[in-house]
Length: 330
Image 1: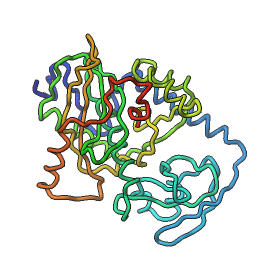
Image 2: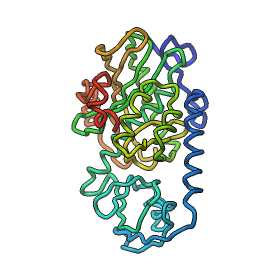
Image 3: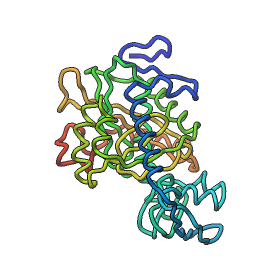
């Protein structure tokens, strides 16, 4: 099945090349989830009430400093703006009190020490996991926006990041039983990932009630099946992330912006026959990427691409969810 941008055979992709219109064809359910996200985000901010001050002790270059910020409103990104513009651009993640990874755009709750993590630090493992997880999330956004409605696409989930596996993953369901994307189709998906990077969109986090999460994913039976187990392990809350209008479930943390994504290849699609049924067929989408600040030669990157095509051995989406919820919702 070959990809022709203007004449596309079912269930291939409907890819759009105007960056600012990337999300213009988002489904009604996707747009509704984003609207609910915005409303709940606004409600939580308004419920903060009287503004209380906290002290954030920043540790790092150019020098240690103490910032006075607003409890439940100020984020590590706001702190970075006080320190310098380049720290806003380069920081992937925050580390609170030398132990707790924290999203750059997640409000701070208490006084703390703050370090800003990037991909070139001597110990980048925490930031790297957030990067891998973010790539899976962004792949879901691209897939959601790229498939024609009649393809019957449902995003299922993505496993927790394992950099040693050589690939990031997003598991999906399609109506087509024998979908085998061509090299041009996979390349087109890779281009859409790069477009997300070029837009430098914020990646936002929000904790919501299980009831609201069920409303957000009203049209996705797989997400609705997952939500009770996710909420049970998180004090009744479900953590969701948003980029553009795309919303998905993840424990996080994730990097703060799509602009941190650099070279990227969507390299493979593996059919998963076990658990598939008439009209609902599982596929494991895989890719490999580098942070924007990292550069390697074509030969070395080609080795990474080839490795990423091998079936990732992470928990499969058709395995019993109750037993593997920690594995399936990264």
